[in-house]
Length: 146
Image (cartoon, helix red, strand yellow):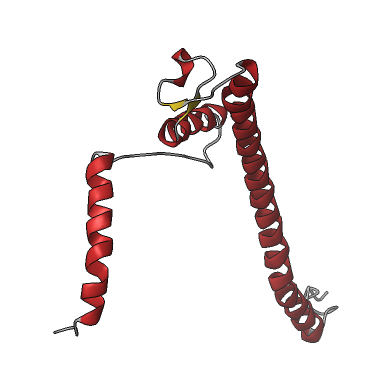
């Protein structure tokens, strides 16, 4: 008796066509996988942004609008607004506190980090900006030397 060869029933053409179909479907599988990853990342980012916007709205409603409405009369903008009735925070204080509020809200999420750093006193920074702006026209009128 003769042993049967397992490939006797299949032609090499069928195997070749099957391999070609699988290779042709590979880019589609990769595209679908990348599409799924991108969709998940966009949903996570949208959720984080929604959370940030909700935090900012809640902070603004309680620490700015709520304080103005609760105190009839003059409103002042000061850095220590918590201790002054009817006062609201200055922009620098507002930025720092919003950063804190958002960081607390996003503490459990790794996809959003907010930081604020000041490398030098603000007065010195403002002076440098003014000096730089004043020197800009002079720099533009001089030809570059190399």
